[in-house]
Image (cartoon, rainbow, N blue to C red; front, side):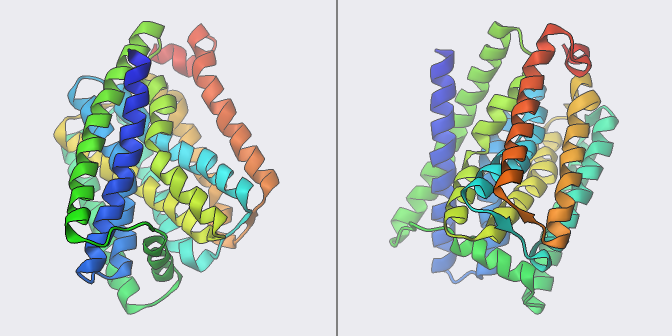
Length: 328
């Protein structure tokens, strides 16, 4: 039954997230909302919706390890798994002017997140500050991009245009949004129940399940979007999708979750996973700032690193991994 819950949760999260994005984008276009706004807000929020509801559900039901693990694990999956798969399909050459600003914001947000985590927990006031900072970033980005039609503005428009298969009738749009939210909400409930049961039965800390299984499951919408973009040779959309999702995850999702209930960080997270997150983010900076090409050989390396990271999570169950042993 546990595995059935997990499978059903993944399916509902994936298709529910897709429904919300398609319905919301179609509604926005119907009411002539700017593609810039659609790309920066609706697409970014929609693809992060599964992470948001899973984290809220986990934190409110007494499984904060899954919530924190999901945020960090999703960002690591974005940077290693998703970029690795996308570059394996078609090598990624980034236009630095399109992602420089948002890439630096992602690096700054990651650094602030690490500082908060080193304090042991994310309190309600910190969640409120994260959400305020995220809102300010979005507002300033929209204001700047509307005035200066630079690379970032074009990237967000391309993200909006990458959403296809949109409904044409108003009732279909509304049905997709409402039905999508219902599917994601129920899917999050099933996934958290299944994940906590699996962790309990296997004797694995909640954090490990959140960092691996749950993180990959909630990252499926980003993976699907990036695969489509890679096939269409839209490398900047792949990178923009990862950057936007990481920013939303760290400040939006953790911010909302901490505002609802303070979120503690386990020793295992502080001792090991935070530094992996920071290290991988630093590795991506040359790609974002210089236009360095992510070739298939580098994609294989990213995927190998992600496989090694996941293996470390479970190898530590024997007690040989200091970070996991501390959090067990």
